[in-house]
Image (cartoon, protein in one colour):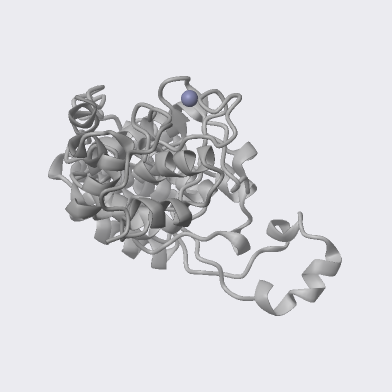
Length: 337
Ligand SMILES: [Zn+2]
C-alpha cells in the first residue's frame, strides 16, 4: 500500500503549540515544494486532511506518525477528535485566520486549533486580533472588551461550562429573535448606497428585512453591515457559517445582554412592536424565574409610569451578575499535556 515501509521524511518542521494537523501537513509539503495531495500520496494517508482533523483514522495517523517521526498520540492532539460536541458544532474547518505576530517572517502562516472556533477573534499568546480575508464591517465594531467577554463566555459554554445566569443558548436565541416585524429598509438605512445602486436593486431592496434584537443591543452592527445585507441565521448552530461581522456582533451582544439581563430586556421591550413583543416574551418565559420577575417589574414600571428608558435603567439584579468564566481551558490543557 502507498507509503508503507517508506523511510521517514528527512526534514520535518516542528509543529507550533496548538497547531492544527492540516496546517502542519501543509507546512511539511512546502518544505518539499509539493502540494498537500502530493504529500498525502507519498506518505499514504487516505482521508483528506480537513476531514482527518474532525474524524481521525488510526491507520492514517500511524502512517503520518511514521513519516514524521512523531507519536500517534501527539498527532491525535492536533485534531478535534475529543472536542465536546457543542464545540465541534461551532467549528469552522475552512477557517483561514492568522495572527500577524505568530506568522511573522513565515512563508505560510500556521493555523491553530483554537482559531477554528466560530467565536475566536484574538491570538491568546500575542493579544492580537486575528486577521482574515473577511473584513466586511470589521472596522466599525470596536467594542473589544465586550467582544472578548462574549467570546470567552461562548467558548466556555461550548466546552461544557455554563457560567451565565441566563443559559447561553437562550441568550443567543433572544439576540437572533425579531424585535419588530420584518420591514423593507427605510430611506435612511439606504443612505450609504449610491442612488444608481438603489435603482438597479430596487426589487431586492423593497423586500422585508429581519429586525433582530441584536440590532437593539449592538446598534453599531447596523452601521457595520446595512440591514439589507445582514446574514444572520435563525439559530445558534448556523452562526458557524455566518460572516465575521455577524459572529463578532453576536459576541458583543451576548456580553451586553448577560452583564445585566433585566436591564437589557427592559430596553429591548421599549423598542418592540406587538409582533416582536410576543416573540421576546415567549423566549423570556423560559428564563430563570428571578430574572423573569425583575424583567416584569421593570416592564411594569415602563408601561405604568411611561418613563421610558429611565425606568428601565433602575432595574438591577444584585446577585445575578454573570460570573467571570474560568481562565482554565481543560480541553486544550489536556491536548497540550
Ligand atoms: Zn499570535
